[in-house]
Image (cartoon, rainbow, N blue to C red):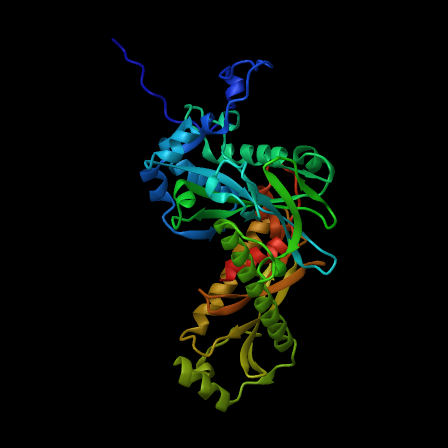
Length: 427
């Protein structure tokens, strides 16, 4: 007798319960189910905690890709159960989207939307607390499934994101799902929050997203248990006279954003300094400066057998190599690379930088970005692994990696968000 063998899991489009006939018709006379009795997404604690081990707010470097990878790793631990069960049974932890809404004022300062929770909210421990993010529990209608009917956590989170924004706030008087069709809106998955320092945190995993709107857009809460405070600058939020009593996740979020902005500003200042030095006319490398380099790095620059056309020079107090590479479509490109005085092998470092450029240019050529370099802004950043400043093109082709961060909102890149991500990358 032939037994049917289980099929290998396929990677197909996600399936909504309604598409498979798993949702019963809605009876308009049905009494609304109390929040605590609704079916929501949860995970067995040993499974989800093994994947998300770090405490605090952890920013993501891969955006939506990481969201999918992380939740795919724990899909066998997903359950759909009553909210009150998940909140009282310690063997479960349930994820919720946590969605700050930001914009920039006329001075370019970051502003975050703030609201206050009243005694009507479901979490008693959050009564009176102020929040910087919209969010809620993914309920049954938000569920998305893999072909084998395991819950797809990442797609469920994104479906819940739209639901929560539609239910909790309006944007210029209309719901979010309508607003994004008419207005430029940025979207991104920012990271995760695990905070076991209090009872509410022990029950949940925060899945951090962000929504960016244009200056002047007004956001207002529409749920009776939420009170609108409005947009406030990050500086005001963190000031002692803010009048806010932030919930713990929001406090962590505000401080994390402040650190990122500070790091971004420091990076920008350092970049200006590097650019100013790189633009200087190079002085010849002297024996005295080569000896100083030898004393700190152990490498004798005077013995470096340079390629034809390459020169070593000094700008300010820094040693640089002026070199060149052949771009696959644009010809010879001149490069100025800073040599660190503590680098024991600047030859290998320079070769690694040039190899990375060659690989990057090759990828861009494959993607049809042949005109990179014509009218393209160049940016330089410090790469710790190479201990060197690396210059790279910034433009449409340079940003291709970020396009997939907004698969269903049709958003555009937010320059401030991109700068903050770059600061994280450098860190």
